[in-house]
Image (cartoon, rainbow, N blue to C red):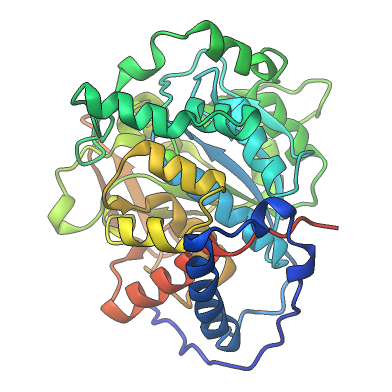
Amino acid sequence: MISTPPHIVFTSATHHNRRDSVPARDRRNSGRGRLHFARLICLFATFFSSSLTANAQIPVRIILDTDIGNDVDDALSLAVIHTLTHHGKFDLLAVTSSNGSPTTVPYIQMLNEFYGYPQIPIGVATQPACHSDGNYMLPVLRQMKHGVNAVDATNASQSANGTDNVNQPDEKTGIDETNGADKTDETAADAVPFQNTPSAVKVLRQTLAREPNQSVVIVMTGFATNLVRLLDSPADEISPLSGSELVQRKVRLLFVIAGAFSEAYQNLRENNLLCDLPAGRRLAAEWPTPILWSGYEIGKQLVLGPEFLEHQLNPQSPVYLSYRAYGYDHLALWDLVPPLELAYPEQIFTQSETGRVTVREDGTSYFIPEEHGRDRILLQQTPEQLTRAMDLLQGFLSEPVILPK
Ligand SMILES: [Ca+2]
């Protein structure tokens, strides 16, 4: 039987006014900034006075395994995870990247520092299956780290060349390999931290080894490369357990952005599976804990338009700059589903009954209901659910950054 989302009850939950601790960089208000501020007040007055009845739960312990750089929604997802960490919803334990671009690690570190979490371990795939800068990470890094107006320069250059939006993937079924092919000296200079970054598998093993049993949620918003290698990892000085044993003992849920399960997309070869298809197929076949799958059709419906970008985001934030540099007119938010569902389980989205996901040899995927099955998928949203999800996401994305004490 398919569960229906419990009715969302609105309360007058207290929200402490912590605006005084907003960093100086976020208080600089231009004319547009004042408009932004006014809208922000309205938005958050609405949101916080109508807080969802979230469970009084301990923070969800999350490891984010991302392909940040291939698409920009990974960056927005990390930003929202940080914001919900501020809210006490999450404890972000580590970030691992399946994207092997040298810009990936400094970019993640920059985002972590911007949100006040510079200490979060970062790991990266060695010999990655895919890599791409998505045209946004390097200019945003230059602008955030060096104060160079690199995002506008990139946009101007692209427009002059008639190459605006060249990185827009086609229905998320392919990636732009050319973006990660050539690295300039400046890229290399910005990528210095990459050289000393531990492998994703090492960070995953270290993180899982020190966490309580059945406590960790791994969120995979990219390819399965790192997680399958984790399963294959042998006992070592970090843990006497193999990777598969570590996962069985420490992970309570894997939340996957991959596959396509609705009738409309039954023939879709979804990118997160396609990019490292052998790993994607093995993940579906061998992963030993419950998996929640958010298929292509779920995130596809969550769309941000340029009006939100231009009027409600802080123009000095890396989220704004990344979104602007990426050049989407209308941005689908596949990777924003996990933070919403984990913070408000089954209050925004609806989960299926249990079953089993299979990934075919051609990269298509399907779900079959099965009693006591390992997997669940998210079901397509009602218009009301979509509205709730977008209201929350826009609020989180435009929330002033408050550095943790
Ligand atoms: Ca992604």
